[in-house]
Image 1 (cartoon, protein in one colour):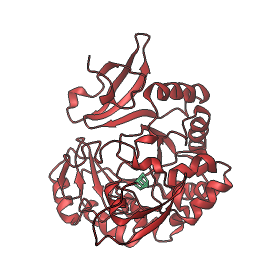
Image 2: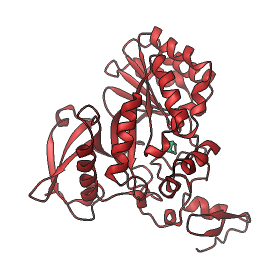
Image 3: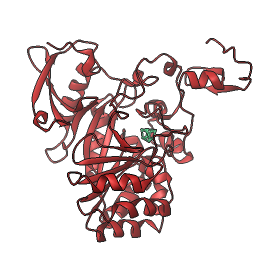
Image 4: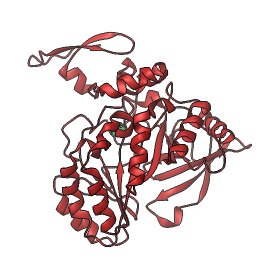
Length: 364
Ligand code: SF4
């Protein structure tokens, strides 16, 4: 590793990576966009207790591969779809509000590496301004609070944010994207939370939690308890996972994860193809293997458990990956697209063996 010539950069950090210990300066960490190491005590203990530490350590522990992984920091065009600071409007019905740059722990594969654990000007500074935009867009039926993780904020702060959204009649649901059920399930024991969900209900909207379990080993007894309590409060729960090399690229593991989600009342919703994120693209599984894994998952689940879609969240839209044809082409369709006419349309590309993303396949 080259050292920086900046004489002001005299702070050196001894950092433990999975493979080795390295001494790095602040400048080197910034230049390589290395996300800070941060993991809750709960998750650190859970992954050991689960018996899956050898896989789950890659979720939160830094790897030297982060220095070499090529890619970009905004793979889905979030910047281009930002309509007012902190609010994205890519698909007609959905608004995406970035409410914090912090999370319970920092996932090494995060597609928002450019934001999480940093100070970011992409976080909404003015919820009133965001709400004014939403109010002018009656096609928007739901708002997703994301970041970062909204549940690192206090319930009082969440109440203040939803204050701006509840008066908007055309919103029928408020979604919270959170990984806290895996990282710190006790967050959901907060006695102020039921009142927040009740307010959302009273305003005629459905509170939805989009959980994020990548692996059966993350679904702790505490998480199960909190899911049950949330369901009793009228919260709908969905789960999204990311397909991750070395972590869950195994149909047995993912089928068990989705079956467990189904059992506790969390509907498996998206399995995301990992994105070509700078510093995290080593987590990508080739699409050819991804398709095999998805077939394997479906072979192991009952009809009512296989409610997930295998999705590539691309700059052009959310693409559902369907299957590999006998003609060697990968068949896909737009699950979401800015252009309504493109939604549902099937298209295909020749599947190059190493392809991990749409752009890795030729347009022919
Ligand atoms: S919890 Fe979500 S936003 Fe936070 S680091 Fe993990 S993937 Fe990124």
